[in-house]
Length: 361
Image (cartoon, rainbow, N blue to C red):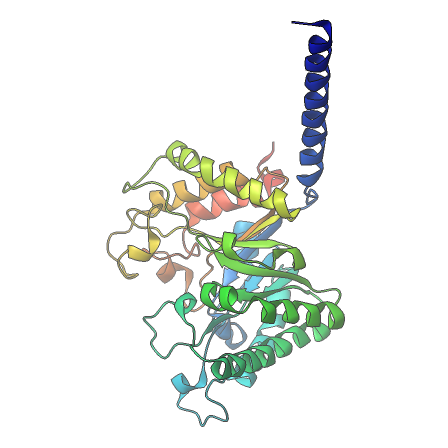
């Protein structure tokens, strides 16, 4: 081989190495998700309408789990489920829900809770057995009707933050994969409206575990919201180590996804039922009841989740699902449901990660 050939090869290697070095630096810059100084240590409440009736002391949740954030997650269905007269084909009973939320917030803020995420669960279907994420319509006219009523609902939700500055965050949707996939420009316009009119309100979208990669407007939001119901281990009571191992490829995917957008992951929902196979396909489990109660499966699920994610800089925090407020602690602890109220072992696990200083000697 000639001297010139050797020089060409050497030059090629140097250029390739420089490209690799630049690529590595660029990749590091791309993945520089800003570290969250304080995790969002949150819990979710669905039955918030009971709060202002005084049927439950919300101080239990903060004291027993260390939560400082609450996700208010009202289930809001279109009006035909309420047998009310319709002005348009699709309407939400907005006034009823907004009044109830406003009445509940003072109770929450007097219960050692500092901040609130508003995360409505909207359902356009007239069949309560349908999954709301599968709903879509065929015509442009129907989509426009849906978008008008959706905007009206969220406009009123955002207004709540003006009277209650502790409302720091709004989720602009929850598990609406067909709606979000088919009408992304509407969601982008919704985000623009909130940015212009509520600049202090943080924004996210709560994507189902199998949906987040298909959302196209993460760039416009503050957090990539994920409802973490990933199927993990097909066993009645998997060990914590098995759950952590099952989470490993999921964790890698979420980290890569977070890096690609330079946005932190916020687990807008995470949790496990106290039932056999709690860490598998939750949507296939039997209805909530008093049979087949397995607290250890729930405990291991939470521990495995925290071990996998809670120390990661690219994870902003999350909201466990859920704290029951419609029943007493004693009753809610004796079933195989999602709630952690009335279940002291899982409460201690949550508190260990939410308030680690309280466990230090």
